[in-house]
Length: 336
Image (cartoon, rainbow, N blue to C red):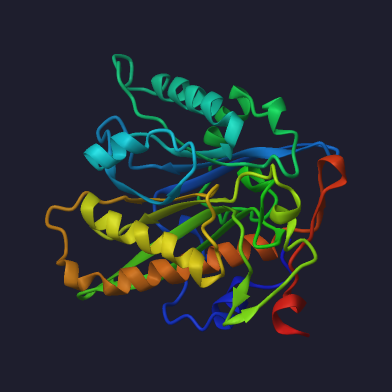
């Protein structure tokens, strides 16, 4: 567990927008998160994280959605239909790279068993992944259908656990152990206040920079020392109750990818950097684009905070073949 409060991260990063009530993606009403962690000694560090929008019911088959691709070295299942139609039809599942395809099949099976889908013959499952092969025996493909269903069925509106949990169990980023992180920021459009909530699965390379200062670890050069290392990736899921259409959500999603750079991402060749943004509200009349600046800033801030949270919540981990991902501590950031 982190040795700090999320509001400490908010203060450290000098953010302008206030966090939501829990500083989490679940601050967006009707969004739940479920996670299952799969561990076996130092050999396996993997799992599943599911983001479940309650608004996907039999009466409402899709939500406005967009995908932004920073670097496309990834296996984001369902991305092309979202790009084409601007619609999210299923929960969003995150897992390990080689388990993504089994997870997609499990998600389809779970959806087909839902009331109202008795006659469904086409469905677009959305599954993102990062490569946990540095710390985990990824070829085992230890994530099963049952794990995916358990994550979906156990999803709650509580603040999600962060760090080495669920799909974040085997992640490392910016030279430190990483994993799942979440945050939210409020944004005003006109006279109305909305929430932008973010959940990240952080697994990307670069040099961590916080408030302009580099923060180094003894594992900073592990990609250079390990020529076969892959998976310098980040999956970002963004939910909002702002009434944005799919095109506007695409603009928002791009800001989430930009936020990685604020913390030092180097966007390497092998990086799969994606943001999936959806709204829980179908807009009758979307706001003017010129009114979106507060949402853009809230997105940058929430994503930056979620990534930093994913690092601070992840303890030092010894993985397969004795590989070590060192934990980031609050003292690294403050010098205390």
